[in-house]
Structure formats: C-alpha cells, structure tokens
Image (cartoon, rainbow, N blue to C red):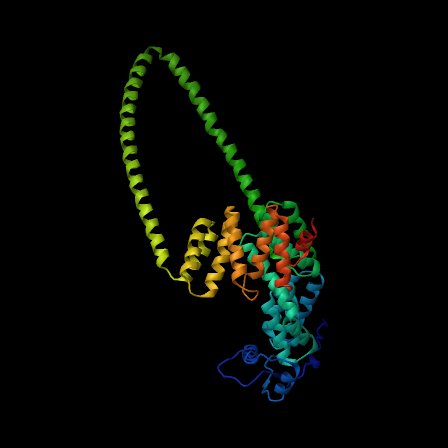
Length: 451
C-alpha cells in the first residue's frame, strides 16, 4: 500500500465524504450509519453503489489538519511495522490512526488487510466494506468481492470446522485442516497459533516449537510469545522458591539434632529418673487407647452418616433423571452438551437420547443423533457409534449440518477398526453425496487407493 504524504498544504480544507443512505439523525457515528444502511440490501454490486452515490448527503469533514497529519504518521508507522512482520503492533497502531481519522479510505483498507492476516474476518470485511461505501476504490471493492465469494465461504467453512473439531476434542482432524490451510495460504497468522497450542496440549513440544518458530517469522510480536515467556518465568520463580524452601527446611533438622544430643546428656545425667518416665509413658499409652476407642466409635457414626448421604445422593440422581425425562428438547440438548464438555459421556448420551425420543424439531433431533454417535465413539462403543452415524446418514440429506461430518467420522471409524472395505464404501458415498465437501481431502484419497 502507498505511504501517506505528510504535506499539510495538500489536505483539502472543505473536502466532503460520502455516506450511505439517509438515516436517523440520532446515530452519531458516520461509519456505523453507512454500515447499518448498506446492510438493508443484499445487493452491493457496482451499479447499485454507483447509482446510490449520486443521492448521498454530503457531510463536512470535521477532522482538523493537525489530526490528519497525526493519523498519517500512525498509518505510515503501521505500514513499516507490517513490512517488518510486526503484525500485532501494526494492528494496534492502525486502530489508533482510525480513531483519529475514521473516514480515511487508505487507513480502513490497511486495517482490513491486517485483520485479514490475523483471521479476524468480520472486522476485515467491515473495514473494506466501509472503505467501499466512502470511495468505492478498487482495493476495497476487490476484497469485498473476495470475502463475499463462494470460494471464501468454503474456506470459512473449513476454518470453522477446525475450531469445532477442537471443541469436540477431535484434535488430529483439526490439525489436518489447519495444515492444509497453511499450505494454501502461509501468511495467515491464526492457524500457526492454534497448531502450536494444540501440539503443546498433546505433549508434542517439538511440533509446538516448530509452529511457534514459523509464527515468529510472520508475526514477531504475537501475544502468544508474551504468554509463553510469562509461563516460563513463573516456572523459574516456582523453582527458585522451592530451592529456598529446601534450604530453610534443613534448619529444623539441625535444631532437632541439637535437641537429641541435649536430651541424651540429660538422660545420662539423670539415670535414676528412667523408671518414673516409663511409668508415665504407660499411663499415656492407656489414655491413648481410650482415645482410640472413642475415635473408632466416631468413625462408625461417620460411616453411618456417609451411607445416609449416599442414599440421599441416589435419590437426588433419580430425581434428576425424572426431571430430564420431562424437560423440553432444547434443555435436553443443551444439558447433553454440558455433560459432554465435562466428559460425562454416559450422562450426555442419556440426555441426547431423551431429546431424540421426545423432541419434535428436526434440528435438535438430528444433532442429538450425531452427538450420541460421537459420545459412543469416545467411550469405545464402536457398534453403537456406527449405528447412530448410519442413522444420521440414512435419515438426513447433504443440506443438514452434520451430514458430511457423519460420513467422515463413520469412514474413519471403520478405517481405524481395520475394516478397510467398509471405510472405502463410506468414503465413496461421501464423494458421491457431497462432492464439494472439505472432507474429500488427501487423507480420504489415500484410504481409497489402499488395497
């Protein structure tokens, strides 16, 4: 992108900006005005924008020359930071420039490019679209078209699938998608962040460091580095504290040693008092035995109380089950998701099955069927998982949310279980039913070629 010229004489005194549509005067933010009105129509083709611009109201530019100069300085600083791969700092700097000069198209476009690299797609679209509303320049129009295209919708679907897989603890599936994305577009920042954190979670420090190093090449001041350094510093501090504690712990042992020596000397010096001490010890032992008997009685009472509490707990569990039975399908479905998050897969299956048997809406019944299959797979109930994946595939169509997911999960379940023929038949079905699915990837192609 071009740098801003900082010659104050070149700034037009009475330059007007264009805003979209006539709207309510109570909205003070001009950008929000433009966005709100532009979303009224689904059609933002070139002829529509050009026709509308002739009917727009002119609003005077209330940004002073001094503030414009300051915004241009920040814009140029953001450009320099981006060129040196300090994308995070560049984002912060361009935000400050935009606060000063919110109608400048170049600043809006640079913010769009930076947030796109950070995979903040909604902010990127908003920036480019706002810039297009103000000037209809070529760069903003190009990126609005890109972010509105079918190709980008497919890309966004894959990206969202990778995040959803992480939430469902399907980490390797998420890694596979993100790896492919990096190969297609190595400048996107967020996939490196997610992959580094995923491998760190899986205990593969070598892979985690590899993606961290690659992240450093494209975004040198990413916030992930700061959190990593903070974590390492805390570890070092904890180690130092433990070392000090160990040193301090030596002192009581030294004192104890001194006391033992003193006691020994005292014992030798007062040898004739040994019998008195022995008799006292016998009495203390008797008292300890009595105290022990009392403790045994208390323990027996505690055991009785614990048994009563356990019985009450069973009654509560029974009441909860009865409550589940009479709950509506939305409550049952959300309860299942909550139990799944807590890794109580048996409880989740029970809740989802009630949603299936008592539900009335297609959305919650279909998604509950898919969730029952996933939860059974987590528990190692392969036959049950296969049964519910098949039930989903045979009941619904490619227009439903988890249709290609169910195909893929079923195929991989067969494959990991050594049932190659069933896996291949499933993946052929996936290719036939949903030819544009993101699951028709290199892994599936490799399985289809196996003999």
